[in-house]
Structure formats: structure tokens, C-alpha cells
Image (cartoon, rainbow, N blue to C red; front, side, top):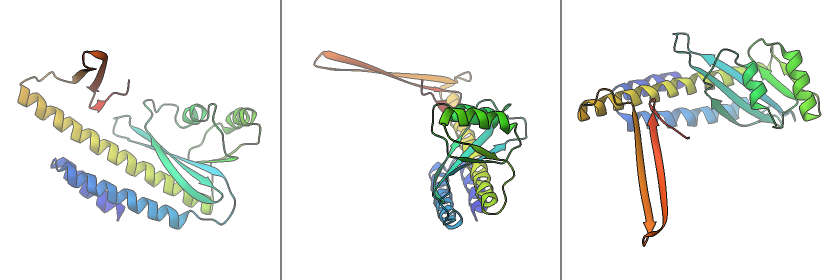
Length: 212
């Protein structure tokens, strides 16, 4: 069902029907939450992070890392990351993500890595034993499959948003007759009765808003 909705979302974005695409995106997210509640409830007081990586194999170099948090046997939520460099993923991602953060005793991973060194590093950092499981079975395999599917959906949605941004920028370039327009900077200067001047700037570059 989610794959069918995802296809419809992409088709709506291609037609530049962005409001319809957003509604379909929200449907996918709602279905994901329902499924997560159904599948992730082991009844065991197990704490684990489940990490899945999905790559685009068309040369675009896009990658999504989905991290699902299991606490007390229940799914507390997940988050998708889009690293700029996919070469050393996921080992590099794990080392960076858990830097100066608490780490659950179990990390479930779908990729083969040199886990001994990373386990020792995280164990010394946290003060308790950390195990990295790269060959899960049973319910842990279900958790990993769920995280992988969530990563795939998140990557599909991200690519759809990027394609939509490209079409919008092209339309703006044509409307302004500025084919080389790629970066837009907007400034706002405000004050209170001539005092307490405040300036702000927002930047749109490379098909996205910049945070810094």
C-alpha cells in the first residue's frame, strides 16, 4: 500500500501538484507509524538502536540512514539522516552519531563492518558493554527490515522534493529571464522607532534552504 501511495506522490510532484503530493506524504507517514506500533512490541525490556542504510545506485551518490530507537521492547520513533558522503557509511555514521551521546547496549546493523574496534570504542566511551549485531534473526530482523523500508521511503520522498525544487527554480529562471540563477539571498532589516535595528538573511542554494 505504501509503495502505491509513494508512486502517486511522485506522480503528483511531477505534475507540480505539490499540495496533493504533501497529502500523500502525510498518508505514508501515518501508515508507517501504525505499522511500527504493530510490529515493534516484543514484550521484552530490550534497548536497541536499529540502523539501516539505503543507497541510490544510479550514480547520484544519495544515501539515507534510518535510525529506529527501541526502548523497553517498544518503538519510540525513528529519524532519517542524509549524509553528504556515503563512502564510509555506515561505520563512519555510527562513530560520528554516537560521539558524546548515550548508546544503548545493542546496535542492530544491516551492513557488514569491522565491528570489534567500534564496539570497543563505544564501550569505553559509555562505560558499559556495547554489542553490534550485523546478522539479526527473528524479531530483530523484522526491526531491521522495517528500518530499511523507512529509509527507502524517506530517500524517495527526499528525491521527490528535490525534483520539485528543480522544476520550481527552472520556472523562476524562465520568468525572470535569468538562466544562471541558482542562489537567492533575501535580507530583512527592521527596527523599533529607529532603534534596536535587527537584520536577518535567508539563503536558497542548490535547491534547498541553507541553515548556515
